[in-house]
Every structure is written in C-alpha cells, then in structure tokens.
Image (tube, rainbow over all chains, first blue to last red):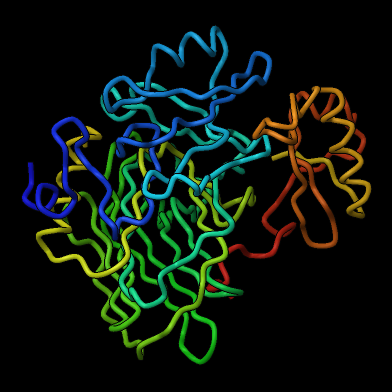
Amino acid sequence: MSNYYRTILNVQTVIPVNIYANLKVVLSLDKFNTAADPSTVRRSSDDAETSIGYVTDVFDVSAFDTFIGAGSGFLAAYKNQNNLAQTFSQTTLTRQYEIQKNIFGTRVGLKGTTAGLTSIQNTAFTLTTTAQHYYFFVPVVIDGLAPTRMYPCVVTIGTGTRMLCAIRTVSGNARMEILQNITGSLADRITTGTTNLATGTKYLLTYYFNYQSGIMQTYINKTLEINDTGALSSATIGQVDTFTVGNFTNGRANEAFNGKIGFVGYNEGVLTAGQLSDIQDDLIAKYSI
Amino acid sequence: MEAHRYQNINDALNAISLINQSQGIPKSEKSVTQSYTDFIEGVDSYFIMADDVTKSVLGVDNLVTLTENDFEKGNPLEI
C-alpha cells in the first residue's frame, strides 16, 4: 500500500481507497467508501429498478445476475462516494450505461449504448474555484474510433467555461486530447497527443488542468503524454453547472464515449508527483490495467 | 443513425409521451428512469433517435438519417 493512501487517504485494509478530502468525486460501482450507498440498476426485462451493493469492496455481481435474469442491466444512478448526497443519474432509458461484467479484470465496466447518446451526470455540482488544479482519473477501454471526438468527462463551469477530457481520432488512430474553454478574454486551448490508443485495451487516462500556470497535461497509465505549457494568466473560474461522464452534455449526438468506463475520479488541489503516482498505481492495480 | 424528425418541440414531446405510455415508463414516481428517450435539438429540427420501439409507436414516415450537419458542433473550440 502506498504511503499516500496510508497517510493521506487514511486507507483501511479492506477499502483500498478511502476518501481523501481533495478527491472530490469518486464514481464507481465498486466500493471506495465504507458508508457508500449502492447504485441504482435497471433491468431490461421489465424496467424495474433496484439497488445493488457489494461483496467486500466489489460490485455484487451475483446479486446483479439474479436481478437482471436473462436480460441486461443498466445504470440509472450512482452516488459520488465522497459526497453521498450527490447523485449522478440518467433518467432517460436509452441513454443509460449498460453494466458489463469482467471488463477490468473481475470488475464491471459501463458500456455506452449503440444509440451513441450515453451519459450520466450531476447538474448541480459545485467546483472549488480556489483549487485551480483539477485532475481527472478514468480507467477506460475504447471500443471504436467513432465518433471522432468523444468525451470520458466534461465539466461545464458557469455559462461557457469547460474542462474537456477527450479522445480524438486522428488519421485513423485514437489519441488523448485535452481542451479547455475559458469565457472572457483568455484563449480557448486544445492539445492532442501523439501516442495511439488501441481499441480493446485497458488504459488509465489522467487529465490535469492547471488554471494558475495554464499547464494542461495528460497521462496514459503513468506515462506523461501531453505536456502543454501554453500561456494562461491566472484564471478564476466560476461555479460548475454540470459534471458529465461519457459525453459532452446529457445525451448529445456524435460525442458520446464509445467504450467502457470503470471509474471516474476527480481531484481538486495540487497533487505532488508522489501522490499522483500513488493514485495511478492504485487504479492501475485495481482495474487490472 | 436513424432518427424521427420533428419541426417543433411540442410534436417531439408528444411523440415521447406516446412512447412512454406504450412502454409503461416511468414504472413509478420513485423510479430514476422517467422517460424512454428524449429529443435532441438540431439545426431547425428536433430529433428522436430511432429504434424498434420508437418505430413501432411512431411509425417510419418521418425517419431521417442523421448527419453531422444536423447539429451544431459540440465542441466550441471547433470553429
């Protein structure tokens, strides 16, 4: 167990990642918080919904199988495990993620629907505007190269400012891409990586936005992929309207993430190199990457 | 991608209501799932993504094949 988790995340022996105050969003069907509420799952056979809990710290696949029977199971809602009052949900049936087993080792993944409009979101998320350092951690499997730009995570801030964590198909290859919109006089920015991401392969993608220095960085697993040090005079960003997983907004065409998502973590505030490494190590191990 | 095309929002909402009635959605007021589908606002039109359920309820007369030109760019950095 890493020093970071032992000393800062207050890790317990059973719960590999307890909640660290700065890890403001933890979205997973697995258990990261001893007090976490289960997710709400809908089954395709009759659209009934129920809560599915855990076996130790992992999604209860047996209970899931019993509930869905011969049909499929879809995620209607899950809690932010660092703020259980905060629910991320999808109220439209055709836009809900299908829960698929054994995607990340023995852990489940959320698969976008063929309709291509999948998303799950919280529309009343409040960003800590003074943090100025924002990290997103997303274990993914890419299933296809369309749409040409798809979004594992997007945070919309106020009326137009956004942090966009993207995957972009360039010359027939999927690559990481990081984008930010800033309302006002500061320039919007976009940077695409050069390393090809293979379909069907598990990756931990990390996106980092620094609103003090303007640095935008991404990592593939633990390797620095994008290091954009473009100029940005210290920007004060406003409150967040919406935190969306898997699409640009709720159910938008042509931008839904085409693949599986295992976990979404969002950190506010500076992480040291060691802390960043510890989080990546833990997620890589946990999601069999 | 196929979609049902409507000229105004009320027609799209009525269509969604018909689909929900046919599917018995929502199952209850407590259900997270409140609607079978939702419309997408396009350029001068409203679209409902088509599948077997929507086709059986709404028919196929207003089906169109969507193109990127039917929507505004999702990424504002693309000008």
